[in-house]
Length: 228
Length: 228
Image (tube, rainbow over all chains, first blue to last red; front, side, top):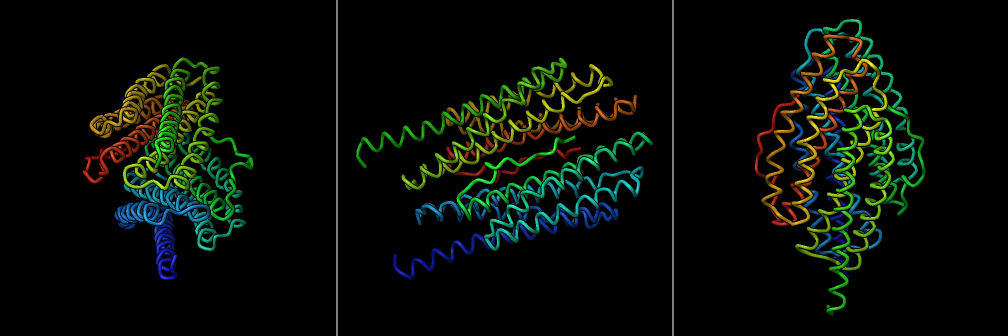
């Protein structure tokens, strides 16, 4: 290949990576904002989160087109092919994270007056380790760092423990006052959404590790908490 | 390409498609069995569902290896590349369906004695349109039929309506008897899992349509029910 073509190709790979980082940045904001909206009962902020989701969908669609075009024109092999196929998967995971955050925003709009401050705070507390996971896995992706990816992957148990604790805590609030049942059901789903965002971060960590090493992290058996 | 090579290539594509159909068949059984286990309180059957999940994961991992190898060796373009990349996505969706069914099986094991027959039946009723969706979308995939895929895609509102009805019905059972709250929370998640299986079937329908036509179904705006 001439130097000119090689450089155009590497520009294309960089554009792909930059687009994924942009998706990741929006998804990160969406998690934080949706949980802030929920804890402060800020309905306008919840709307902002909901309205941001189509932007992520549009970047994902564009990333997919770039990938089809890259494979067809560049016929990548080995490391490059791994990189490109993982990018396809990572884009899918980020889209899911944005979608789950949007769902938290939608539920924040539906809560009635029976939700207590403790219930709102439980979610805010749980959102912090989840945001941190996404932040770290994006760092791992940006720096192609398999060790950092492995750390994120191994830290998913923290999120699961948080989830189990929040789940039990919510049930006690519902039993205390059954008028909270409707809002409480939304809160349980919100906690579950955060737990699933954690799972998607773990999946991204696996793809980053695979991109960098060609090995599967999931082949190493991670002790998985039994979930409620 | 010699006739020999072309035939080996088309054998490889057929193997890929056969593996996806096998994944789909197992996933279908897992949905039906998990909901039967739940409605009949058949804990042994719930265990069978849970134990079947690694089989699906193994086929998915194998499908991914086939795809990487196919792209690297055959350098597909146009229709073939579309076919292969959609297969990657469809395998991911089927793995999620199996995982959600496994989760229903796990929750079936955790229900206490406060669950009523009505609660169990509500789930069984909801599982039928969901199973039908998966069955039809596998038919659409097997026969590469974009019209059937579009029908499945359009029928997701039925599942969403069922979900909304079951959600509200469950809340009334919990309000009636707050001792049901813990089991009821599991039931709400089970209903949500079925609703998400429906979403994954819709995604598969989109990939089947794309494989067959090169067009995106999601570009057509489908009226989406506002969910509880």
